[in-house]
Image (cartoon, rainbow, N blue to C red; front, top):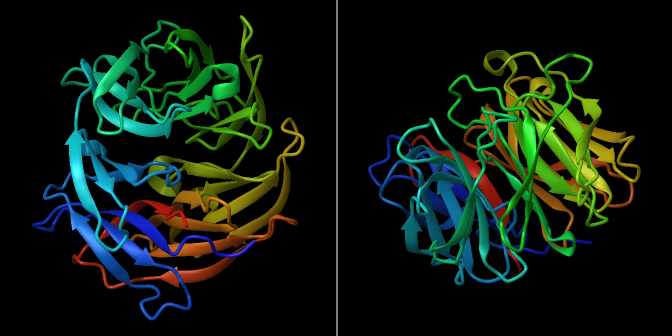
Amino acid sequence: MGPVGQYVYVWVGDAESPTGDYLAVLDIDSLSPTYGTVVANVSTGRSGGAHHVEHVMPEGDRLLVNAFRAGETFVINVGDPRAPRIETSFTNAGPYTFPHSFERTPSGNVLATFQNQGDGHGTPGGLVELDLLGNMIRGSEAADPIDPDLRPYSLAILPGDDLVVTTTADMQRSGLTPQSFQVWRLSDLALLHTVLLPPGPRGDENIDVAEARVLEDGKTVIVTTFRCGMYRVEGLGTMKPSARFIHAFPWGSYEKDAACALPVVMGRFWVQTVAPTHSLVVFDMSDPDRPIQVSELQLGDADLPHWISGEVGGDRIVLTGQGTLSHKVLLLHLNRDTGALTLTAELTPAWPTGDPMPHGAVFSRP
């Protein structure tokens, strides 16, 4: 495999910019005369804390980007990558507020987690289906006394099983300690189960349940926590789904060491950002109960890797982060045969604003 996409779409926040958050289009074609530069950008006019985008660029021209702190999501048309434009934005969907993560359904609609209901942070949100312009089609509440602290965070869709798995981290950092994942029926968004994660050997690996991903087989789900735990979900589709602890990375505190954030699945490999060790770790997940570490890419002592996204049909990964990564975009290469991960480019383009904080980033499609 080789390079596939020519651009990376980077969602950038800058609280001091009069034009607000913006989507920057970064040329990553090494043979292009504009390689490594911002060739286009579109500003929202508001500073809302540029946060997640969709985990990969979906088919079609529209990309959803989320300003979580403002509770607003923008729909950006990138049909012409060098002339992106904002089509619309949305905040709430019925009673549901503070949208967070998005995945596309088999029908092409958007499935979204909303952290809350109403203006405050006191009521858990839900799982909502939207059309491509953010209009609500239907939604279901996530609240469950099994885990009163839960707030819908990330999601993974298993269309063949008519299921959705969501996680429950609290983005407001309000002192809640969610410890569960939830299972929903995709066809009608009925909440089927709320399942508590068991603690690992350290005792707190099950807190702040962050991401859910489906492995290469299309049916095995792994969930991770910000406190660096990894769990295999078992019994999906049964009356008693559960979770098996399979691994933990080092973790100390959010203040000192940051957290374990996004993973990406590429073939049989799982690539995990591990901010406490300033590295990315690659596992062979051929046996999901026994992840085998095959490589680790060590970054600088002040680098805190956070966001990663894999190239659809390719072997590159885009990385952003915090610490000394705050103004950079890194390109990595994953050897699909061995799992070896290498740093291929460290880009610090001339951003349109003075204090840029790139966060979500995805490769363009061919």
